[in-house]
Amino acid sequence: MLRYAKMMNFQNSFRIGIIVSLFLNYCVEGFLSPRNNNAHKGWTKLLQQQHQQQQQQSSPSRRGDLSRTAAASFDDFEDFSNDFSSKSSSSSNNNSDEDIFASLRARQDYLSSFGSTSSSSSDGKGGLGQLLGNQQKSDKEVEIMTNWRNAECSSTMRPSLDDWVRRLAIDTFPLGVCGSANGSIYLIDLDRGETLDCVQNIHDAQIADEDVEEAMEKMFGNFDGGGVLSVAIHNDIVVSSGREGGLQVFRIDGEETSYYKGSRGGSSKTTKLHLTSEGMLFYLVSTLVTSAAFDDSGMLWVGSFDGFIRAFEYDDREKTLVQQSKPSHEIEVGSEVLSVSVNNEIGCGVAATASGEVILFSLEEGEELVRWKPFGKGAGKRKREFARSALIVQNDEATGSNEAVWSIIAGGSEGSMFQRRLNVDTIGYVSDKSPLMDDEALIGRFRPSHTMSVLSLSSPFPGLVVSGSQDGHIRIWDCAYNRAVEGVSVTSGEDLEEEAQFDSIGGIDKRPRCLYALTGFKVWLGSIFTDGKKLVSDGADNSIVVHDFSGEDDNAEGFLFEDDDLEDFLDFD
Image 1: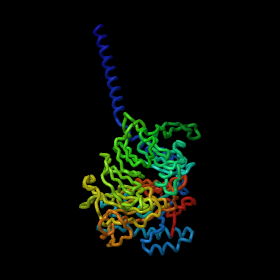
Image 2: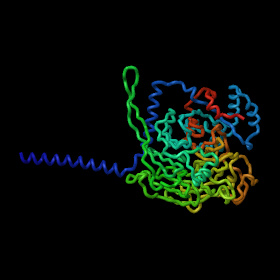
Image 3: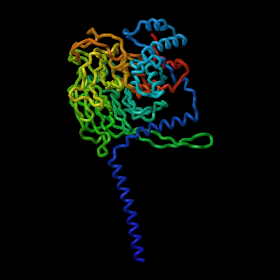
Image 4: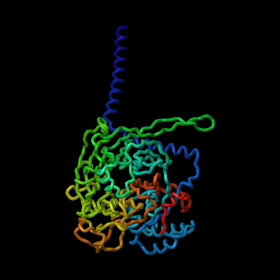
């Protein structure tokens, strides 16, 4: 009996030991493992599943919500063919649906000459064949890319907030976050056009301070819309900044709720998402933050008006963002930083500064690599125009004997845009000794220039870049470097800055070519987002505009949107 009792005690102790060991292992893994990087993507997937279920239950016609747009026109496209100008001018004063549709069709035919599936050359050079990189693409990918080049998209305005939209950020569609003119932060579902949550007045709308007013004039010129300066989102983390200084941190949480369903007393469950404020990032309490961007390696990069680029670990389990007492990296650039963007594929970021310089820096080392002066040495001083935005883009994918082509594109405070090639090797590393390449084929500003500050740049896929300006235009540019071009030499200094970093003039002009423009936006246009299928932007008062190039939202054959609000986005000259 005693032996039995001892054996039972041993077995119980063994079981308890196993349970304790498993519990400790769980705790250690939970403590040491980084924040769940799939959390936000889980929320997005959950939203999509809920939308699909509701659409299956009732699928109302979306005819009154979508616009099948063939294109929009331009304001200063003097470099383009006169043939199209003569065709489109005759219909500019005719408001009938037939004439407008005819204008759309004429514009469609004109754009197709730049390169659609049928117009790409048989040898794979130029047109859509070059844009696709001569790689195997699915039929759907080809369709989407063709839609982008030919301006075939469905357009919606959603949601309508109770305040003016001032900044917008999206990680994975349809979940997004935006800031407003009164300083509020909204969590939004862009697929359904709903506001999921709102943190009211977390930032100041306006501040009567000379230094702040000087900073706002530098950032927005005469069109400071008030409120939020920047927002960024990654997984389940949201950050925002305002003119009062500092960086607010939020977490996206979700809770399951039940709701009444049907006439038989049934119920169903749904998950409601909301923003939870975690406070302000301690180190930046008194710093005017102008821009923020997350990379995929665990760093939040912040540009500020004090002339620094800083990086903070957002995946640190021991210290959350609001608890970090100092940055992991700090780069002093010597001039006000107005925008920051990162490119995870080549491990670099770029910052636009008020001195006119564009700073290229390493995400891994947290160090400056090189400075580029696209607007000349006197930019920001005796020359008025300076760098307002910058983006790293892939011009061409690697195909056969052709290496991948990368470059920096800079947008200016007065509407000019310039490009500079990056020296990237075959495995995707930027050269430490010579990061920039001198390429006379890219000399000169993009034509036509925007007429006001270029606040935002984005790229849906290699070979295409999108620019958003205060002039109310979003322009789509073909930036493929190896595309077929006419033998046009750059022999005039008309488009060159006096002190731009190029030694000679001449050669084939391979500057990006504007395909078309989406118009009708207000001067408050300051944020654009692309994921390859959709183009999302602010600049429409209290609404967000979504242009869908996926071809999945088909609204008959080119009919115009029936609501007057979206007709503002169609301009036929």
